[in-house]
Length: 296
Image 1: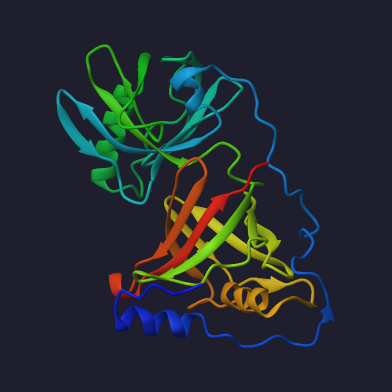
Image 2: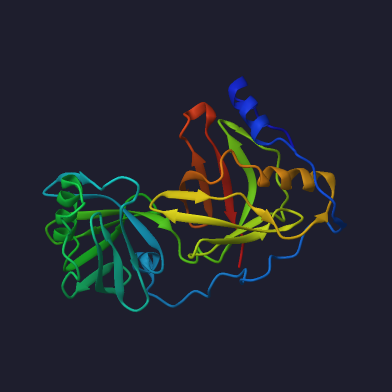
């Protein structure tokens, strides 16, 4: 349980962030609290979809990285303003960077067929000209039959039309993201890491912004809002006052301490990991969370 130091500034920041404030009066308990009450801790059961790359698209949320038209790459607006999600009711919904949309969508293992008209035209009012230009190109390419191909791995996909133009996607939220238990093995500050946190500590995020979980010993509740590629989190509030071993209580205090309340992070995910980092004060002072998805 050592902190690996990359410099005096990062070490000092981590020490400040992870100051143990001590526990109040509480009852004696075991080294691990019960699951927080109120909402189910289990992710929803996986629905049946196509296999292959089409199946990877289903149920997940994908951010649009760029669109390539006639060999020219046009970058999407920042902060994942353009995104899409494929549902089991044979529809795709999302945002083109200016306005929301929904269309019918039929997926096979390697192809996508879109049907119907765009349900909403690009909005001019309040949308920057650069975003409108991108939205027009996205709507042009994201139309008709498209083939699905991996670009690098199953986190990055390309949707290509018959002319060779394509939409580049990257995973933003995997299927079952909400309602899943996310363990917190450690916190980070600069290039340093906290000691290992209790294995019993986990967070469960819900789409309505509710967060419940366990800090290692005590249950907690909080609030978290995912918007684009940012995550805004509020300090956890204990729901119980159990006392566990000193190491577990120390880790619990780490999770109760935040630099600001609320604090905004940039987050990224794979299918079973998530990192959230606050880079607002520069690399030496960045701090954040590392999460690992627990089995259902």
